[in-house]
Length: 155
Image (cartoon, rainbow, N blue to C red; front, side, top):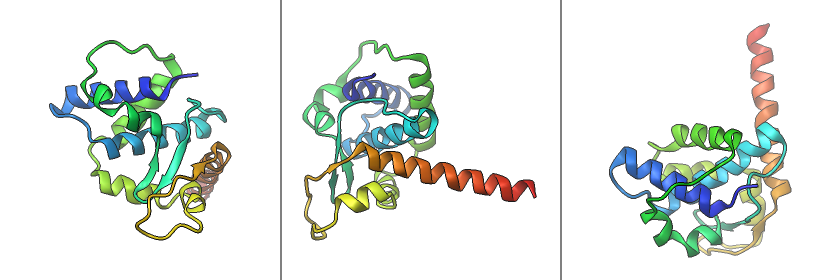
């Protein structure tokens, strides 16, 4: 199992190398969330143990938040399992050019984030842990939608 801070360092380094600027913290949280979801989608299990909380602008991982300054300046090597690195690279390619607020909007469409916000007023951050089981349900729903659209296209 990977560490979310290592994944964040890898993403940050890739982003800085490609874009010639630091990745912003919000984008990093959202990409990590979608990486976790994609891991559930592809492999049926979490890629990392750390949790997300349902904040007003989408899922936030405390470990990324706490270590962000170190993460964004990281220049060393990160060693990730091959299949995990492929998943991380896929999500990076998909979302690297997307505006952070657009990514935030996409996380707001996820059942896991919506459920974490129940009882919390708009504008309040909240600190409810998003259960991994709920992210798994998001992934399963995505897989079912993909399977349905493939079946329709084959008809």
